Amino acid sequence: MKPVLSKSRFLAGLQCPLRLWYQCYDRKLATQASPTQQAIFDMGHEVGRLATKLYPAGLYVSEDYMHHPEAQKTTEAAITNLDVPAIFEGAFAFDGIRIRVDILERLNNDRWKMIEVKSSTSAKEIYIVDAAVQ
Image 1 (cartoon, rainbow, N blue to C red):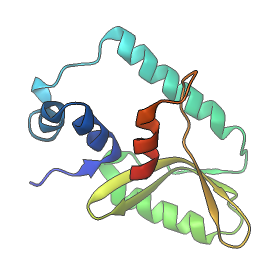
Image 2: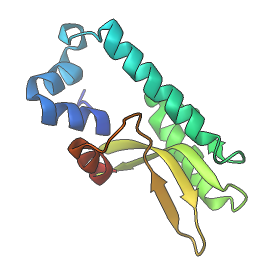
Image 3: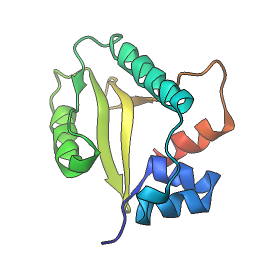
């Protein structure tokens, strides 16, 4: 089966092509996250969860990465529902690349603002690539 390219896999490939290969073809050979890295990942998830509190009436797309087509349908339904002011973890796919957007804020005139949440004290160059893929 052809592997699916996601934003995180794309970024992993930029850092190390072998890492991308492992993630796509042999996950058991990929380096596991250290306890420190896992704590950083967990903190990032918590920061993202806290950011959603800025939009209390927002809709969370709950389908996980294994159910991306279903998550896309939930996202499409939320976009057409004018009562939804924000979408968390909105799912999209284009040209074979899957993405999840941290926060989509509904603006006036059928426009949206994409908000990427990062748990960092400064902007990093990789964030530009991260946003560009989205």
